[in-house]
Image (cartoon, rainbow, N blue to C red; front, top):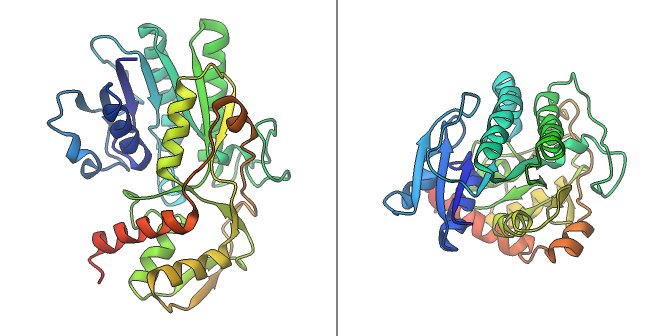
Length: 313
């Protein structure tokens, strides 16, 4: 593949993907309306002759001149803070935006990879979560704007594959972290790291017994790269199955940051998942992929990034 479009390419994950594809000799078109993405994430790529940035909202008709070999659709608010503040925009980018991106893939005869999410499993009743599990989602709850947008995205991607023959790929992304996350992202890892570095209490929702599984961003994008070049049409979980409770993770972050911040407890948000752990058997067998970066190593790098970003000693 020579020319690749990444929608949401100025976001946390999207910017790392742009970088990876450039490093591997591809021409990259990055499209973003900078609603939740940041120009700072791609500033180091500006000036590269193989990189082009287009400021555009994908919920409007998408025009990209020339050929495209692949489209990776990553445009969407992705943190609870964002999609709870931007519920209609989240639904529009998951529906209209995905439809427009698929239409472009059809017109360009390009391979299409959809960034889906572990949130399609909702508050799961099956643990760990395999791709065959249909999920436990509240469609009218506050989190439903994100969950259902992604579930719709998967459905229309498969419809375009079945009806129009578009070569679709679907990655279900589990909790991912690393440099270029926003300190005010609202997700547990940047929240804890920012609070610990600033000497503030760490906010634990519920009793802290709920679990998450954190995947370092370099592992994730390698998995996405492998999936794009595979022949797998169905959804594939990409994440790190190393599960940890929120309470245990809070203590890990405090220790990594050299902080003795106390913990404060608040009510668990509506429909917040109690468990989250990917079954990555399919990724292992089909893509020969599994994560390589342990949580301790990845957290060290991420803390260094936040320490510099926040100007903390």
